[in-house]
Length: 459
Image (cartoon, rainbow, N blue to C red; front, side):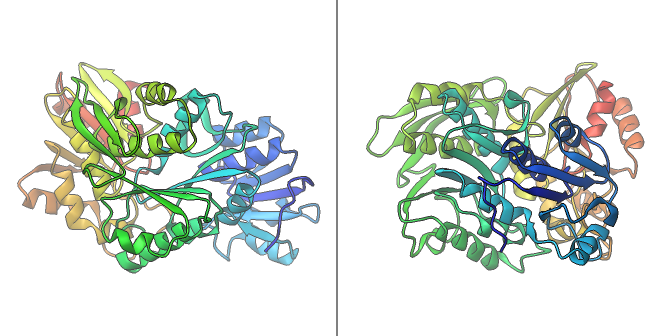
C-alpha cells in the first residue's frame, strides 16, 4: 500500500472529490500543504469551497484530467473499474488508495484518533462529540458525515492531538482505520448489497473493535445483541452504556419537555451522577449523548462544559432539522432511511407539538427497500399519514422489481392512510391541498426528498 509522508506533501487526485467525506479529507490535506485536484459530476458548495482554497476541480470525468504530475489517486467505493478516470489511472500506472485507506493513514498523523461507528447515529454522535471537544477548547480536527452549523461545514482543522471521524461499516471501510478510542452505537442489518447476514455484520464490528490497541478504549452500547461476540478477546478497555443499572453508564429519570427535548440523570460507576439536558429530541439521542459523555470523561474534560455543549447542540443538518413554517404547518427534515432510524425519528416526533403527523418518505436504494419492505411498512405506520416518493437509486439500477407502489400497498394493508406520487410536484400539491394549521410534516430519506419541504417554504 502507498504510504503518505505528511512531512512531504505530494499531488493527490480525488475521483469524486465532491462527496461529503472526500471533500473533507481533501480540505485537511490542502491545509497540510498538499496539492489537490479532483473531479465530480457537478458543482456544489463543497467543491466551490475546495476551489477557493486552491484545489483544481474538474466537472465530469475524463482521462484528460490526470497526468504524470499526479503522485496518488484517491477513489471511493462507488467508483467502478469502467470509470474513465480509473482507466486513466491504470494507464498511467499511478498508485492509488481508497477513501478509507487514506482516512486510516491520516488517523496515524494524530495522537488521539477517535472513530464513531454503528449502523445508525454516527453523524449525530460525531457532531455531539465535536461540540463537546470545542466547548472545552481542545482545538480538534473533525471529519463529519454531515454539515455541523457551529463549524459551518463538515470539516474543521485543528492543531491538537484529537482527530474525530465517522467509521462506516459499508464495504468494511472502517477496518482500514487506526483508532485509539472506538465507539459502537448499535449493530443491525443494513447494507445488504454488501453483507450477506447479520452475523457477517457482527463479525465486521468485532474486527473493528479488535483494531483498538491495548491502551485504547471501546465505548459500546450494551443493548447490542450478542454483545459478548463483539467484545470477546479484546485487549483494550471496554466501557458499556445503556438504560439499565448493569451498564457502566446508564440513563434514568428520563423526561421530555413541551418540544420533545430530552433530559435524564446519568449514573456513572465510580463517579457522581450528573443531570443532562439535551437540545435535540428522542430516546435515541439520549443514547447517543451517553457515548459523548463517556468520551468526555475519558479525556478528563470539564463536566460543566460537556453539559453545556450537549444542551446547546441543536443537531446537524438533516437530523430532525427544523426547516420552517408555512400556514401554521411545521416542516422538519430527517435523513432516516433504515427502519430503525425511521422508528426513532417518528417516536421523537410524537413528543413534538402537532395535530397530524405526516411522513413524506423517499426509500433509499432498491436493495434496502426490498430487504426491509415489511419493516418499512410497519415503522412508517407510526405516522398518521404517509406519502411515498419514488425510490432514490443512489449507486444502483432497478433489477429487483421493487417500487414505492409496492411499499404503499403494504402500508395500506396495515390500515394506514398512504399515498404514492412519482414526482415532487405532485407531492407538494397534495400537501398544500390536504395539510392544515398545526400539522407536522417530516420529509425523510437519504436522497433529495428535502427539496419537497424547501419548495413548500420557498427556500
